Image (cartoon, rainbow, N blue to C red):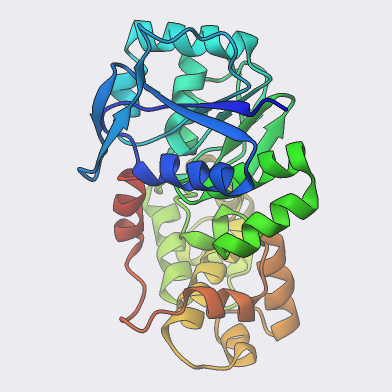
Length: 332
């Protein structure tokens, strides 16, 4: 049986793990012939300075015969998607490929090639809003680790490319083969939870007026307080109905949803910063019971509070600020 041909697309400023992670999964599975194509043949410098060798440039590789096209991401994608020759080659290769995939921000190159219109896709959580804004015909879901829509597969940031590659192997060779690769590489075959568990999402706009700002300040000052609409309206100096309308218009979410998200963030910090029992965190952060906290975590993050603590607790000190998380996301 002929090996399935996997073609990775790279460019200056690509994220190296977007390439090496999936490449290792396919190599471990066997039955795949992996090639790397760049804007030119020869050395291609990644965003971290690691230099990879592209065996082919788009001007010298026939796009026909590609089984699976995988476009990697990285900071350089914004320049790469302006490269008309690269975009045209991606479109041509995708036209004849059995499957098309992207890792992280590589989805922007697929979008530039006109491959995503009307499809559901994902990308790194920090770039999801930009993708939705620039491509309104694309349905962007920023939480899944990967998404399959027909023959187009897209994944979240960096290591999620390995989750995607395992899913592609399972699609080709079956669950047992994918499980064996996951076991060998010490990976989840199905990683629990979505992207929301990995960062404090930038989910809200900033208040535009002083009354709404006063309500928001009160919520953040004490997430565990009652914060019903009457109490928030008193902080804002508005009627409850007026605040409800103003709050939703300015921040994009109603007060109750905003309060819940702030409480979830407070619980996330408490779980990773110390040893306080889960039931005590639930009471302090406004959930009242550990069961309510557990249900909310499962609904919003896809994991239990105890699992979240086990995965993300740091021995190096407390979590960074929301601004730190945003800056980290922008470098993805």
